[in-house]
Amino acid sequence: MKQELNVIIEKDPETGWLVGEVAELPGCYTQAPNMMELEKNIRDAITAYLQTLEEEAPRSQFVGTLRIEVNS
Image (cartoon, rainbow, N blue to C red; front, top):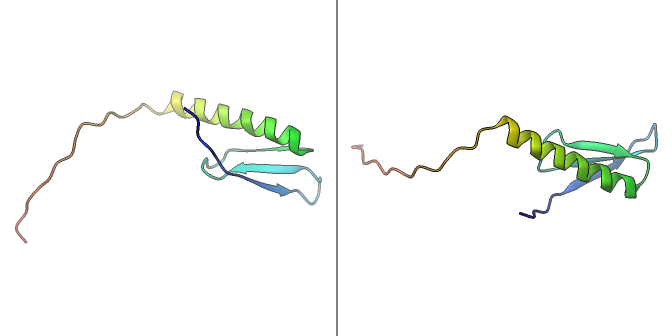
């Protein structure tokens, strides 16, 4: 399944490197000296992040919904 993710890019004032952080994936970020390498690195970071989520979190199964009536 394809999905589009937003990458926030900033330039580190000390090193001049570009730092990319995926807005939808907390803690998913990387850096590179130029945009071409940053795009490659961020794709690798996203892949690793999503694989880690799949390995760590057991998937829940939808069971259903329940409507409850109460006296107020």
